[in-house]
Image (cartoon, rainbow, N blue to C red):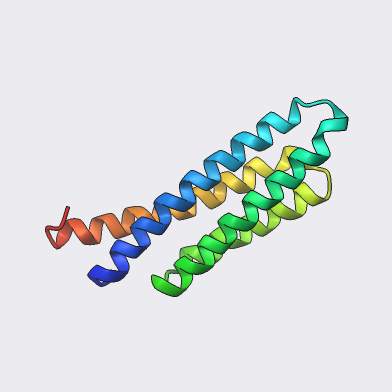
Length: 118
């Protein structure tokens, strides 16, 4: 990774990690809601996942890395689970996406550290 792509990858990874954590927490909250409230919450979760997916697509363009595709695959799987009314299985895939994105951020941070920039 060059300096520019390392900075962009680190920035995107931090933004995406925050989105994934918020989304995971919202999924956990939705599981405790009464049935008549779950549909609205699931729509919110789908919207959040859409925004996270858009940020991953941006990361793929500005700082290419194979980890983005793996994270996106897990996001897509979690989205299908939410839309199929099995939200309880989505946190597993969200945590896998979080792991992929964290790895990208760590790699970018190491590259910046080796250049003496952090």
